[in-house]
Length: 303
Image (cartoon, rainbow, N blue to C red; front, side, top):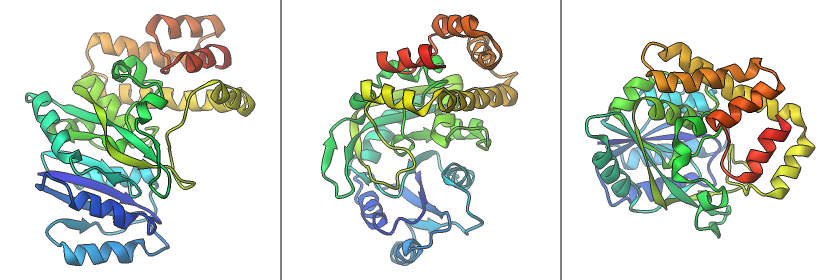
């Protein structure tokens, strides 16, 4: 059984297409668990219609308070009991083989270990017109980017493409407030304690619109100029979020992380307390760089 964790908020323009795409999956052994984050539009009415029509397939959790996307997914995660878990945004469209492809790959990978798989995604606009077949090619994200040193500075997987097993879920426990985002934290824990595999083909249509919390973007010279205009403080504040997340991981799992990975984490954690030249020496030694030459230049020159 797969639990599909669907977090919603003011999604009445898109939620019908997303739920329909999940219900149309070729793999049928799943249930959808929904947590709404206090929608003020018609999202809840639409969801309740689906719950009434598919009571064996769809459940909505009691609303507690407005949590934000990260805490909403954490709330869903704590309410999942199945052997496999998939995460879903409220505004995408899944290709009909998403679950089937993901569960097949995850079962091959896990071998009684904590495990995670994720896939590429195609970018579409709000009306489902194709922008790009491959989000990861636009963002220059490659398979090797899910190694720990790379993940500490950049998440390479969108949560909506991730599937994990229960062994990994049990290690994750509660996602701390220091996590930059739920999917980033989950990827880091998988990198430290489990196995990760990337499916090099798109399994969802990832909708780009003005309300996205996070969206796909090109990383080119225009991106670097934009970052320069934003100022160094914005960049350094974001980098500090990554360090704070890593420090929390060390605090929680200190006695469980093997020595080579602990060395990587400890050196990364030191980056908020070293001088200009030592900072760059550690960046280069441990290859704490985001994917792509433009981002690497930006980190060296702007941080």
